[in-house]
Length: 617
Image (cartoon, rainbow, N blue to C red; front, side, top):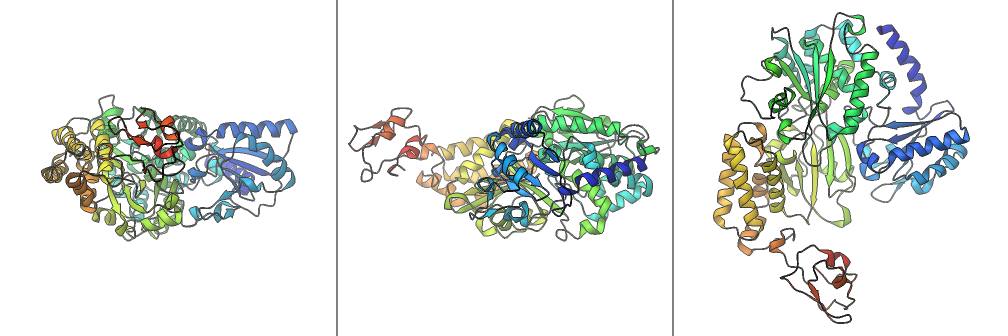
């Protein structure tokens, strides 16, 4: 297709879809938007879509379209249904609710009050933009997620999709493109935050006629789902960005390395690539120009280490995923020894918007050294679990308490973990730390890919460090001794402490060995593996000392340091706990005081949850 033909599609389709972003839309048509991200899909959103379509077809209802979209962000309220153009926000919808929504909202214009979303403070909200969850967000990487059908390329085109690519191919030189990305201040969103424009410029100067562009979609941090949601909700955005980069650096082929564990993302990428080829955005002579570029998908088997860029390249080549020695860096010798640019999904997602709006626009968002926005997967002990995109410099307190709605059940905030297994734990005294690369590094954490796990005062920080170290040990590729052996020894020491067998010498060894692993490991994953240990030792050392000195775990998570007891004054002899105990550790006849045989108790807490009188703790 020519650029003129694409512009005609854009105008025609945008006229159809204006109601998606315009609450004053003058037409009579309505769209029922249903989240089809992984979270809502697991909660039967495909059946909701089928039910809406069935009812509309059976009743021959006109001017209503049912649209599947990507993630709206507020995952804890899913499945989410939004009616446009009035923007009514329904949460926790089931297939059984579809008929009532059609009967009342679509046919009579009456809101279904019982399905309206409740904010954390109990306020009932009618529209998406009334929720506190969205008020401090600024969507750039996620701007199309929850708006367009990710399996319809014309919907992407309608919202300025591939307009940046057309601008690059017809109005800008290779250096112009790289200069815009450089001046924007965009930094890699996958971990260390290396300047994206600088990485592209290194690649541009390489004289090898064969060059590659790679998208790192190997998202392995526990609790992280930012990249997955972007791929599920806006896959063409990534294709456009990679093609722009291909033009800028002189590459003709791209690869998206994505986990096979993301079947929805893979399916939508396959659809997007096929449609992009049909419309002339991939392949030979793109948009009638001399530039040719194509993209392929490569599936990863779920190895955490393949998130490291050189291990990822090894995997694409069909080898075991292990990091390479650097230098040479991928920009000089990457895939099959050829110059290669690697960026992660979120980094790519910013590129088309920067090209369209300019470097100055993007540079005006964020902090002095960290420009733009950052997407976080907000999870753990927080009311509003979901996907959040905020300007760099937003504080942890704002994310957790204003956007996240605070800690459930009246519990107290204890710590936040950023950066996954490579990050650190941030205590309450650092809640006002702005989210940017340098500030997080100063307090012993890191940005990472964007996982943000919130913990309340029921969590044991020693056990948390043990959990992450156990993950690292199982995921270590084994290539270098410091990571292969060092992390194993760290796990053994942590397990010893959690089991009540730790000594003061163990605390000393734990810190010394952590610093050795940081210094001597081959790749970034090994070098950051001890971060959860070092940060918890720094901010929560008293908990380690309690485990060692007092043989106690204040949170009750370390089972070998915990006893579950029955308060005889509160016990009513109802016998519910004895009947519920899976190992028959509770003794006592109905009507009599009960007690627990500690030799049999497995600390499963079934009795604690069963007792109606709160007599067991």
